Image (cartoon, rainbow, N blue to C red; front, top):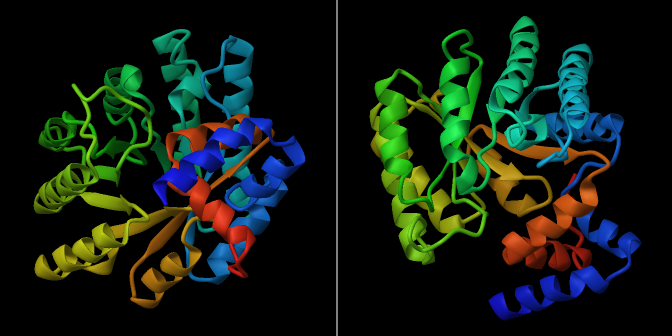
Amino acid sequence: MQILNRLIVSTIPLVPRPIVKHFASRYIAGEELNDAVNTVRFLNSQNMMATMDVLGESITKEAEAIAAKQAAITTLNTIFIERLDSNLSVKLTQLGLKLDKEFCYQNVSEIVKVAADFKNFVRIDMEDSSCTDDTIEIYMKLRKDYSNVGIVLQAYLKRTESDARMLMNNGLKNFRLCKGIYIESPAIAFKKKSEINQNFMKVLKIMFENKAYVGIATHDEELIKNSYNLISEMKLEKNEYEFQMLLGVRPELRSQIVRDGHHLRVYVPYGHHWYNYSIRRFKENPEIAGYVFKSIFTRNTFK
């Protein structure tokens, strides 16, 4: 199956954009904010929460970062007006991290302040390893003034246990824990699935032992089963964690998680930068390409 998935990925750059868009539409809400609103409203009707993400990252001009900041603020305003059960996810490279760290901090700080005014929450996505230290630094600085912001840690990075412990020792205990999708060196990242899964569960247990709130972000049935067992073993309440999944990936599994009585949040990306996002997603995680390709030939409802 991995060989087939990689074959699919290798041919995507040769495929006309309308066809790529057909693939991408399975896990991207659409190009406009209203598309995302409709998607989130449907998810809410299925007893699922959401986190909305305005697509775009690694901008090269300050004007682009300012426009991204305003789009995020508009999204928060719309979530409030439409009474959606959704928070917001942001990427710091979209807000100017690679241009100027202080400029980026000011942008994300404005977003978090607006979210606080709306009694909402902002999740700072983790990007490739070149951003890890700066992302953690900005997150810690934000938490000095705001409680409504959390961070993502990636289980495939060998430093993640240390990062989690450091953050929790500083009283910062709101995480999304995922495997990680960026291509990293074996010197800093686990490569084998077994190693990644083992570290995922190790870090998750440490987080729970320290009374952290964790978004368990995975489509891996083994990790979900092991998380169920850990939750039961530690006698956690339903409001002490949630599961998280990408829009369009394993919809039957996300529905099962809800039926099993757990909170679940779906990551809902939208925007005009869907093409670059799609190509990157397919290349970095061919398994997603396989899921999406399979969906074309099934009757699963993705939105």
